Image (cartoon, rainbow, N blue to C red; front, side):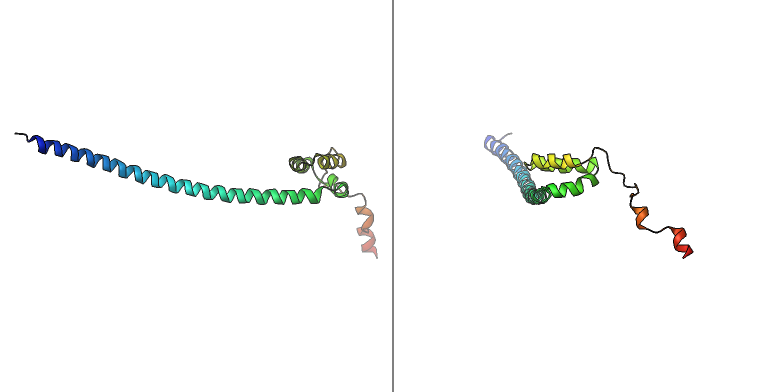
Length: 133
């Protein structure tokens, strides 16, 4: 024999328990999601600080390297692979004229790091002369 009131109460209790369990799991998931979002926000804040420092350092470098005298002294000593990022940095910093100056002072061929200096032989005495003396 079924007791209608008791059966109805039991069904509501089971439904309430199921709802509360689902709510508890949902709350735990939201808590975990919030913790992940807070962690991501901290990482973004650190990245933004690094980006700001990088921009400041790059601007300081552009300020120092925006010199035709420096370009005349150094441009030929840089390879094409070394010069291209510097030119890109000048352009990104809003100084395309500085990039053009560096490009004009740079020769189109890469410097040979193993090339012998023409004056090197004249500066050092011959081995035969030093051993004879």
